[in-house]
Each structure stands twice: as structure tokens, then as C-alpha cells.
Length: 74
Image 1 (spheres, rainbow, N blue to C red):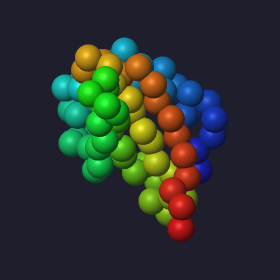
Image 2: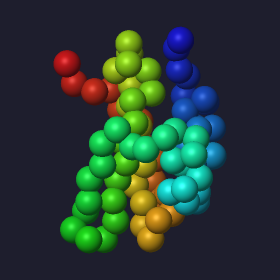
Image 3: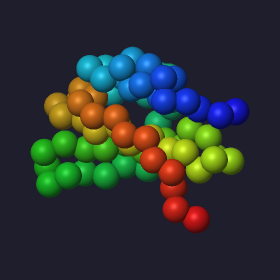
Image 4: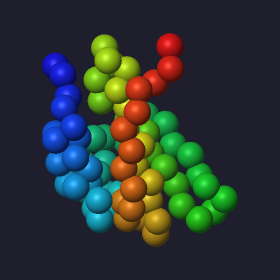
């Protein structure tokens, strides 16, 4: 299944401003997470393993403030 820019933009818009409980209820617990100097944290999710497409959701005070999509390295 291919992912176009519009569907990723729609996904980003749906996530931004959401809280961790809402995101976890849709995507499950994060597959990986990182903490940024006590300021916020980032959750990582694979979206399309075949295409190695992944998503990073950055939180501040438990609210999604940034969503990035990227292709994982080989």
C-alpha cells in the first residue's frame, strides 16, 4: 500500500494536539521512545514495514506537538 503526501498530512493533523492516551488507544504502546533532556519525549511507530516508513510523535506535557514521517535506514 503506497502512502501519498495528502494521507500523511491528514494523519499528522489528526495526531497534533492529541494526548498520549488517545494516541496509544489508536496505535498501541510505542515500539520505541526517547526522552529529550527532560523537556519532552518522542514515540516511534512503524507505519509500513515493507516501505520502511516510520513515524515519530514528539510530545510536550503529554500532548503531541510534532509529527514526522521518515524512511528507516537499511
